[in-house]
Length: 296
Length: 296
Image (cartoon, rainbow over all chains, first blue to last red; front, top):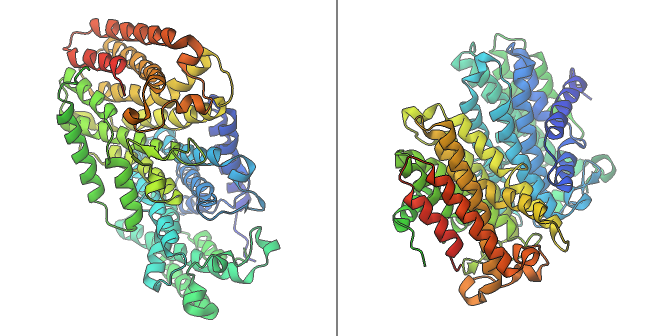
């Protein structure tokens, strides 16, 4: 298993930032605040924050600037998981081996917790104490998060995913779906960080975006593969749940071996994009390796 | 019945702006886009946009600048109605005499439509073509919308409203609930517009915020009264639904006459705040009158 360099360090850092942010809220409704804390702070690999931090590291940016990006992205991610798990969506009882938010609380509270975490993401971007050189980028950072999150991004992808249930869709449709549902936010984890740099060239920005596009898609292909090969015990959610809910997957369209080949190709293309860059991209390369090797 | 000056004009203006904004989206998922259009464009009095426009008028601001504020606020309002109507929340089948979004589509689509409309509100604020003098206010405008919408605002208020169901709460708790659930957004309809002005004094800003606070609360008190005195046919939703779901209301705590007295006092205080201002505030005063006289 590929170990991610300094993963613990960055997980601790982002968890602390997010916990502090919620702790600073004046308590209006205790239950809603608890549900937000539950959805945001209980578990989670923090892949998006990690990706943001190692991108910032490669570019020599201040971690304190990356904090704002990482935290906003994780709030959007947590909001999406809470809503995706709802009975009218994927109807999942477990997430990360724990009861899903609507199971631990109730449905209304889970919906509101998701809603409030979306707002929190924008709260963080608009209020984070960026250093002077980054301040002028605040608007374009918010714009990027908008594009990655709403109808044009993650929410649109989730809708496409629901529409595709019980249907056979083409590979192009499956890629479109995932590029919106999970790809947009993973890509933003890189591109929002490159946006903060005043030194990076347009071409370097582009290559990092290409890297992010490819690992975003590879992440989903690998997810589909894991869903087939993992046991329920390892995964913390019912194995094969995508198959049982009749969702199109890469293994369903390409076969298991074809899907793994697809993941490998995406991996190679991600590494090629990195190879053009004049930075130390070891951790970014390692992250790509982690994505296509991970077992859960 | 008090007629609002130029209400049709402003309704048409904001409807066109919102329709254009959604029409400009590349179609990813047709059903989700239709649900967003249904929730945002079918009916609605456009009270928040109207309030923003007449505030802007009083201050001599450009309508094209106010458009961005009005549209963002209406997106948040529409998102909140879609989610509040869901089976796990108020479980309403009708809204403005039409099937609620989850009835016209389905629950998953309604949840995603609300989610996407929240993002759209920030999309509008971050991308609206403000005039040069307002551009520097973009960040503080987004900050105001964040505070009015999320846990510290509308979502927090909705959670308090749910918590208060089947409970007797105090008048102070009821006011807190409504100041967050409906007051925050109505107040922002005024204060986001005053924020755009470079000429207004701090005291004048404060007086307009006081006006907005009082009409925001009066709006809710009047809503509770209407819920009791209206027939189902007039209202387009089941009359007395707040009583039947055991929600605390002003009439329940103060009696019908006491609630009307409360609304009248708030109305007088709103007018007093306006009286201190060196602007033509006739339409704002008329709006206050409309709020406490309206029958639905």
